Image 1 (cartoon, rainbow over the protein chains, first blue to last red):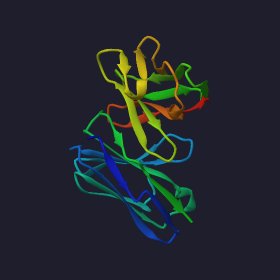
Image 2 (cartoon, rainbow over the protein chains, first blue to last red):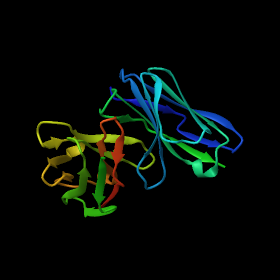
Image 3 (spheres, rainbow over the protein chains, first blue to last red):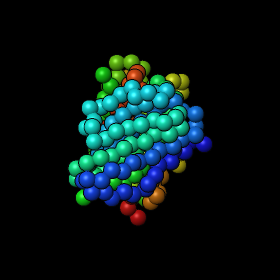
Image 4 (cartoon, chains in turn purple, orange):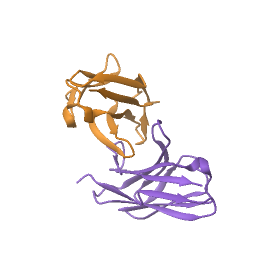
Length: 112
Length: 112
């Protein structure tokens, strides 16, 4: 099973709202990733968790706050977002190191 | 440092025709290479990957790719295009630290 699930599928939020995106995998992977993807562009890496610890933060604004409660779950907490943050947010997982990443279906986020 | 160049942001073929999507890479270490496909409003699906061993790699949906070290290429081919192949295709290389480096993507259109 190579499935990564993400909820919700769509999210509309105002600039003052607080919301969270959720990602889950049951492949025993110990690395999990958040990507942001704008239309007609490749995904851009935001965060990497390795063994439930944040290992890479690609200079992402603090209005995005990741959390890895356990080895199967990854959250992205959103607060005070801007309209330019509207995008498809993708989660991925892999074995730790240079290994194949498996992506979830994404959350389409719209910030009004 | 690793990088990926996809030649052609948009490729159009007729149904039943050969599909050829070009990818060239730059890597200071033996590369791990990937092709992903993304259908509209969906996540990325792994088509195929090259790590070591046989240089001709077969993937899902009839796609294959050949790793040519002398040409630093990893072009994706399919003998006969189907309407359902219309999508965005991303070539990627993985860095030793596990970061996926994507090309800019190629949009494939299939004409009836």
